Image 1 (cartoon, rainbow, N blue to C red):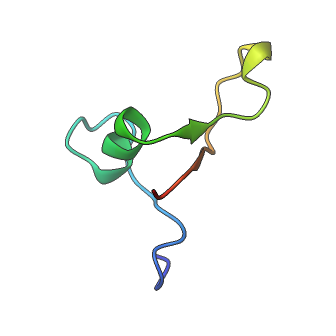
Image 2 (cartoon, rainbow, N blue to C red):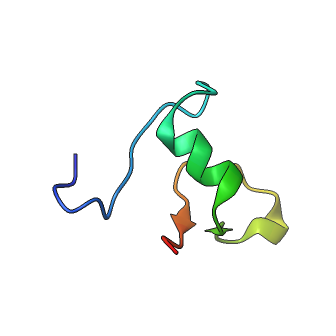
Length: 47
């Protein structure tokens, strides 16, 4: 767990998890999205 909240961890399969909320409701960047990769790491903007 990150003490300042810079990193979020969670279960992507759980529809009630914080990480699932972030991915569905925040601006999320996926590296090389055009290659149809299945990432395990996402970048998101806090604002």
